Amino acid sequence: MGKSVAFVLLSVFSCAAQIVLPEGTKVRVRLDQNISSATAEEGQVVELSVTDAIKSGDTIVIPEGARVTGTITQAQEKRRLGRAGKLDFSIDRVKTADNQWIPLRYTVTKKSGQSHAVSTGILTAGAAVVFWPAAPVFLLRKGNDITINRGTAFEVFTDANHTVGAAATSARGRR
Image (spheres, rainbow, N blue to C red):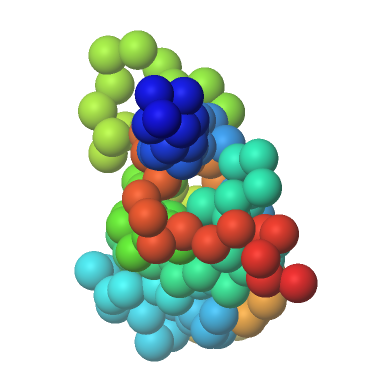
C-alpha cells in the first residue's frame, strides 16, 4: 500500500509541474483593422491577432488567433506643403490560453534599467517628403495620409516570463 500512495503522490507532483513561457519568446502578430492617419486618434486601441500558436512543450500557451492590443501614440492628418501624415502605434500585450495578459516589446533582449514603456517601443509609419519651396503650386499641394492595411504582420517578443495556469490546452488533446 505504501508504494501505491507514493506513486499517486509522484503522479500528482508531476502533473503540477509548472510550464513557463520565457521572456523574449517571439510572437508573430497581424493587424486586424486598417489604420489611417486621417481617422486615427491618439489613445485609440489597435486590434491585432496572433498568426501562429506559441507552445511550451506540448502545451499551447498562446493560441493562434489570440487577441493582441496596441495603442495609437501619434496620429496627424496630411498637411499642406506636401507633408505626409504621421501615424505611430505600439503593440502592448497578448492574451494567453489561460486568459492572462503578457506585455510585449519589439526587441529580443530587454535593456537593463529600462521601464516597460521604453522597451515596448513604437512603430512609426510616418513618411518624410522632400519638397522644393521655389514652386508656388507645390506649396498648395497636400501630402498623403498614411495607411497601414489589415493583415500587415509584425514580430514582437514577450516582455515577461509567464507561468501557465490550468486553463491552457494541451496540443495533443486538440487533434
